[in-house]
Length: 127
Image (cartoon, rainbow, N blue to C red):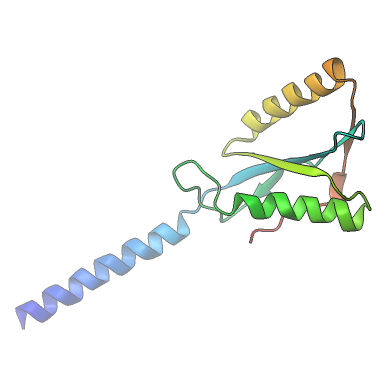
C-alpha cells in the first residue's frame, strides 16, 4: 500500500511540474524584413508580441516558419515574389527596437535603400 501511495504522489508531482512548465511560456517580440537584391525597397513588419512561445536554449522554435510566412505574404498578397525574408526576435522589445534602428540606419545611409513598413497588414501567427 505504501508503494502505491508513493507512486501516486510521484505521478502527482510530475504532472504538476508539466502543467507549470506549460503555463510558463515566454513572451517573445518578433519583427521581419523582406528584401531583394534587384529592388531598392526593404519592407519591415511592425514589432509584434507573440505570446505562448517558449524559447528553447535561447532559440525560437520553428523560426523558419515565421520567415516563410512573411515570404509567402510578400509573394501572394503584395505581389512581390522572389524576395528574401528574415526575422529577428527577442524577449525584450527594447532590444529589438535598437536592432531595428541599427538595421534601418545602415540601409538608408550606407546602402541608399527605401524602408517601407507593412503596418497592420501583416501579423505573424504562431505555428
